[in-house]
Image 1 (spheres, one colour):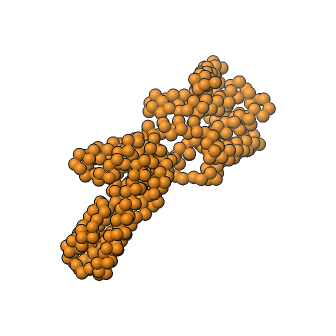
Image 2 (cartoon, one colour; image 1 turned 180 degrees about the horizontal axis):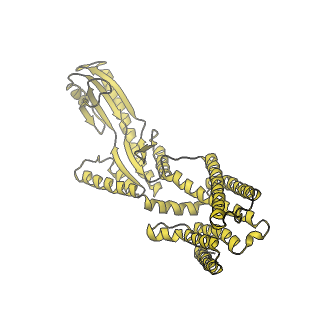
Image 3 (cartoon, rainbow, N blue to C red; image 1 turned 30 degrees about the horizontal axis):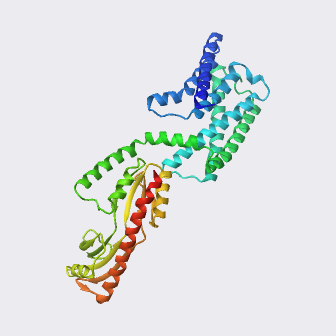
Length: 395
């Protein structure tokens, strides 16, 4: 059966809950009047979400939600709890469904939050503990309903033995779903459901969408003013054409002659020479003549891109592409709650050349540094072309 049929079944079950509420009013069974209408509004919450915030719940979640709720309502209104083991079966099935919901929610949070990460074992443990906790909340609700609606008479919570057997059923369901669910996610068993929620969650990630909009406008201005390196322009444009990413900064790589008061004091440092290409020894020697007071350094800095990703999964995909393209020092970072991928190569030189305008090591040393730096620039160029091509894997 297709999804439309299952949604029709969900609507039928929801309508049944409403009718049972009306029937309970006719019987003046106020406990189940409250239970039926509360269950009805809870079961249609996916519809409310879809109408109010345009968040669509997968049809299987709608069906499982209304089915889990209906099990307990049927038990009370139709007196099915008198059937042997119905209560335990209902608890087991409902708890299994609750555990499944928690599994999907935690996995989506793991995908979209840079602050949450769970391996399979931790995921299974959390689901089991969460289900046990929800079972405890259910038993508290049964106790409260007896106090409010039955004046302390044991109706919902018949005995300590009944309560403990319910908790045992909840626990078994949580452990089974925790283990089976974690294994299922690793095997890709819930691809359709997870892909659906991932798509819906992306639509609600307003912080990312707003930041992306601002970044693209800023990039557009920089392109118009010619402030974007021509060598990275195709890569930047390709990354920003994918809705799950946006760039915040980029550099194709450069060779630098820098003068600083002392090591690490970048604020008062000044460039004696800066090139986003291969250089001649003569250009570097000419730059060295500008030295005044302070330490002089010869630097080669790798190509670098900072890219915001909408989810951890998308960040991992981009990281994999970067590594395959030769950017072996790439990593995923969390910056102010944003998931950032730093695409960075291994090409780097930080070599001291002299102090206070005096150059040490002679011409041979300078020539050696320039030769190595130019070879690094050639490798950066190859890696940039490889990255531009490999980005097609993200589309």
